Length: 408
Ligand SMILES: [Zn+2]
Image 1 (cartoon, rainbow, N blue to C red):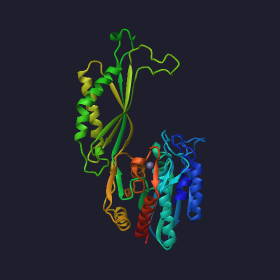
Image 2: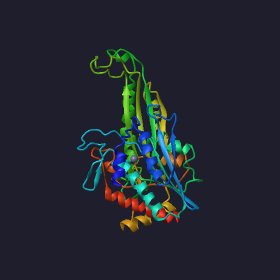
Image 3: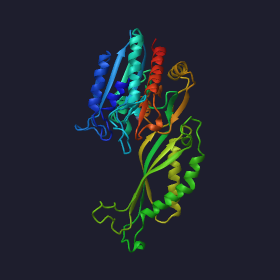
Image 4: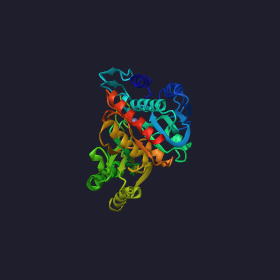
């Protein structure tokens, strides 16, 4: 398990731009073929980011048991985010120190991939006469939306409920927690408009930036206090994400700042355009139409009371909240395996953000999906990211035991 994790970390699959996807897929292909799995390399042609320089490669592996039965699918993303600064070790060396393996992707989620592979290989070795089918997929681009990875495979039918019973995604959610789903997302661009004029005579123009200021003021005074009061019964972690939230991802108005070394400042003109991108995360108790209407109402209200105010909202991206049934076979078997291996009752959690489960549910129409894997979520995307070998071992045991319960 240590060796496998180190080898995965040593293939730097930084995304963006999407480096070495073919290399990591070929490494995993060899590994799984050695374990007598059939494999299929699939390139997600023409998905965002796919090019001959940075092709989006994915790998799907299959192994049938001796009788028909359930199909259990493990899915792991092979991409990792940029390293950033402040590392005390080489982020792509996979250094092992005192029971921990360090490196970019150690916890998110090459450690999880290694744990699921070991779990599957051990299960097949111990129970070769199982019923049903085991599948593993290793997919690209989760960190940038999953379009060249799980979304692509889901569109090709790989995640349809008529061929798959359950999916486990070994993301780093801690070995004693089962993640049942995620909150909803709505990204939109809001644009305000003005009239260009010389900056020395702004009264001859109309500033789109000041109009956007009025929007932000309404958000501060009306929207944010209201969002805080909208609470969910979903077990979302961390606590703050139990309320509805909204981030403003970006703001821009007027002429772009020049590159350093040139004048450095925009020209003196009144901005005729200002844009923000909002990232609204909503709860299973909320309807997306209502989420959108609340924002639109604020803007409409401004249109009525503020002179020359006009706006445009453009939808960018949306995901409906999801929560897998706690009483499903998958969750029950994982729960009893966690009890047997770790001697504790698992916590059921909901992720504040989304991950590839969204495509499995929305495109694949498959409900039985959870994230369960080793690693501490807070370490993901941080410097000196690491995974504990003990945690990997424990969660691999839980995964293998769950296979035993579902495929015999
Ligand atoms: Zn991840």
